[in-house]
Image (cartoon, one colour):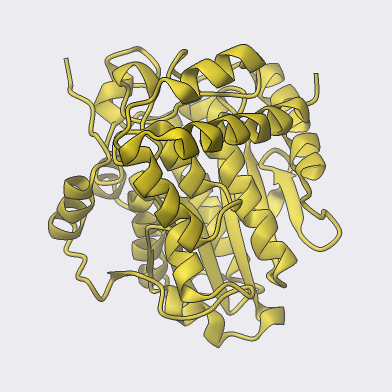
Length: 343
């Protein structure tokens, strides 16, 4: 049985060492973005990779993108990503949300009708949360021909070793539970290729693309960056654009699971969790910020500023009345978010 990778501070240091990142590659924010100062950005995100290249492009020529696999209803860590995209959009950034229906169809072998129906509900949910479809884009993968064509063109510049090196850090954990193919099968390679093609497609009409993902998915961006470098004069794809990333922290899963997961029942709060369970689960987390899914969720959602999060960190450790009150109020907030999911 493959052990889970726990997303602790030691894990983050290991990523830097194993993949040759330096402190100058995975860095904390020292610039502003979307009206957010560096302190706030560092509270929202773990780090960025070449993110300082992004604001050098004009606002009309840059875009932030993220995507979600349609393998199950969204959990609250996923919801927090949507909320961060809304925050960036309201701060003046062009934003795109990709609904990974074909990703789940191939990568997780989900039924086509199921992933298409889920994508439609997810799209409506993003709009209810506040994403502006007129100022930005929220779309499925199905039927979007530019990315599908770019995926095919990209195939000439990718080797099998690239796919093998792009396995998510907890791939073995999911494979042992029958949630994903154990090896980099053709259908999983297609799923990864389409994700990379999404990034490169944006680069055809923008000078800078900022990918917002969890740090556990850093290999996906690396895969796309390496493929982009290999593009030459024989492919009708532009390579001279900045491709950078902003990585979020992970939320530790309930029941000993490494993170909130759409694929593992009981690991997360999701949009089907009853209100009574929201209160119970959030209140039951240990008074250790580094191990508390409650505190980690508070850090993920764009609800608290950096100074408030520091105060909550101290209250969590003390497990005092102020912390209990904060958890109760946060549970009310989470329940409101859940209530917006299309039934």
